[in-house]
Image (cartoon, rainbow, N blue to C red; front, side):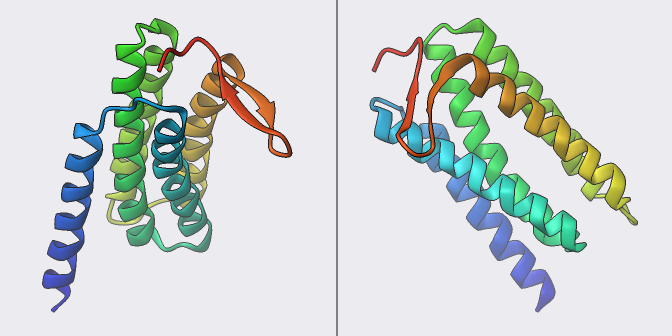
Length: 145
């Protein structure tokens, strides 16, 4: 039964990844949707790490990774080399975190430190390309939809 559940989750992640990979972002609203597809699951993965639920963190991280990959495609199309580089860094950091989560006995402190590395990449992109604040909303600079 456990094997079935794991396979079902893997299939859902794969299908979701295919949908994001095929999605072309043509509006700010679509961009926001993809951004949430990356940030929401990453936040959930971070909370799962905090609580020691490493298998849940791994599942959430896989979903977040697909959102980040879709954002990388978008920024590549925008020819924004700095954003593409930031996303390459984020994806590398996510892959390292995933590898750490796959260890037989993950070290929670090391996982949290690695998660901060991912957040650092997020912050770098936000600092460069995001304007506004939560109360009034955000816009993205250097983008053509």
